[in-house]
Length: 428
Image (tube, rainbow, N blue to C red):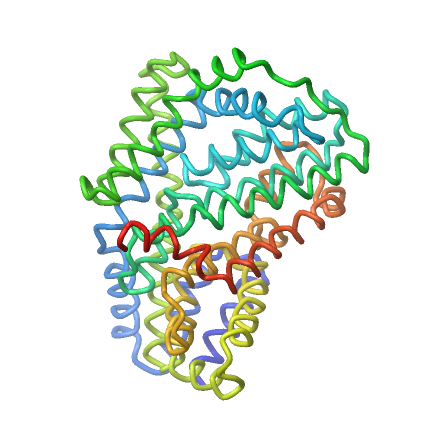
């Protein structure tokens, strides 16, 4: 009975426009009030929110957010765009490929899809329109490509999954994200190339080796951050949290050397980072309280039994879970979705012999699609806003790119080697 109250209250609150974090927290509290007195209910929800945030691994999130804010203002995005342009600008749909490659690089370094959509979209949107691309196509490419940085490490959401899964290795998750993220980007480039050829969008000039070298040298310090962060984690020099702190300091020094920001800008960067961190942490705390209530009501065990009663076939179970997550992603932000549904679905897939690291990549890649869909697709709204267009106009060019992301999801779901080859190669 309590579960139905929880779900119904949550959906009603979402339906009347209550923010997701408040919807989760209030519905959790209301459910507790139905079964126990007020004081223990308030105390339990507060304790679970506090306990959910009491994790050293979560300290990585504000540091990566600071690094992303610095990158967004520090000239790093522009250098990555220029480097990407020399590599793929001469292909059919050249600037679309530049957009995708730059978003992959920036998103991987910053670990934020919203930051990538804002920074890369702000640069590439105007350039693509100026070269003859439609504003809607430019927005669609930017929106979908920006999500690849959530799979390619370092990624805040993979840290959140590690917490929700009860201890999946962050280093293994980071390594597991490389091939699926690159696969998604390549499929997006393939679709964008066909679309551009069909629409007869212009092709850029082939870059000379000196130009490629010049832009590479300019972008190299930014790209080196990936080596520093992942190399340090894999080699055991520092933890993911310490790597995030290194990334923040590295980005600050780099931006100061580029002279794109000054010490005067640091206050605003820290303020924006604190605001974003507060939102993320509120989502995490509220989601942990709901996860506890679901566990208290034995929901994971009941759903495991239900799904296994339908079928014990991995293919069928993964298909059902993916369909559910695709639906969830349309109305729930990625962070609470991971925290709430990981404890529910992970026991199911583990009972079928599916590796938790593999399932983490499936879940994150799946929910990335939700970031590009209404009504709560944060990347969709940022991408549309940056491109100065509307959701209705972007839908048509988005559809083939959605199909590319779905193909990537199917391949990653049913070919575990795409996720697990690198972690196993490094001994994780």
